[in-house]
Length: 314
Image 1 (cartoon, rainbow, N blue to C red):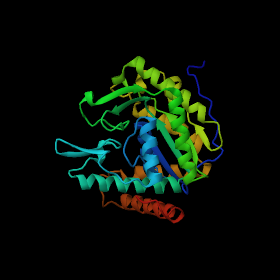
Image 2 (tube, rainbow, N blue to C red):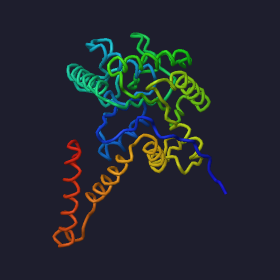
Image 3 (cartoon, helix red, strand yellow):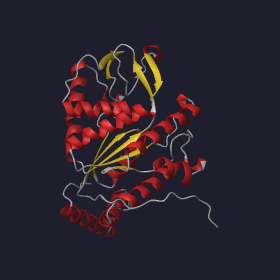
Image 4 (spheres, rainbow, N blue to C red):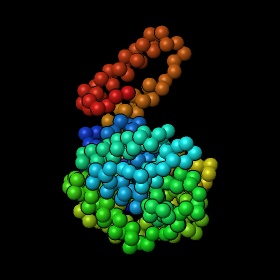
């Protein structure tokens, strides 16, 4: 008896390994996968500017990195003693104007380097709803609790999303012609926009993504479909009933590795898991012979892994 619908997945033609570098941009789902990559010691950079939900926000930081943009008054502001940027997440917030400009310069440089060096670039789109700041015209990445009356809310038309995604791909390919670009659509529901409005938003994103994918070096990973069709049960959601649960994230991660990783990378990943689990082990007697032997074996494993992949540290 078959009790689940399954999304057909094919191994990626350009798989990744521990020798590759990856860049992940976009919504919080990109951060979920990024956390998994970091835990398993892959070489990855995740959202230098913080979480970016909509296509225009992602395009903006890509364009700024490409142009080596000098940040000025337009993108930064002070609110309640904290300096913020309309193009970045709140984790870049700073106590002074100079500090936030320095942070923006730093993450811009980090992003440009990652774009130039990454063999695989993953962009996760979260929403097609945007808030445009009336005074500056910026389609902001984050409203930073600025009063809503200062923004105009709108749903990006499919054609505008397609144009933005094409511009994103052009920027990436100009900096790194060999990079493999994969788009995903986040399965996280944006309930604050409204449930019907969220469905419209996801539909626009999915339609637009498929207009630009299936071209050379531009691909799609069905994270949204895995959540909606293979994990059709509230037990796979967090307590807010909107975000995937840890079990769902683990499941989609396994599918991600199934599609993208070399066989050798999967073997190395298992070795990293053994070491990570060993490092969290808490013995009853740290001075016992058995524990010293256990630590010795663990250190040998780490040394062997580091010899093959010098970037791996624990």
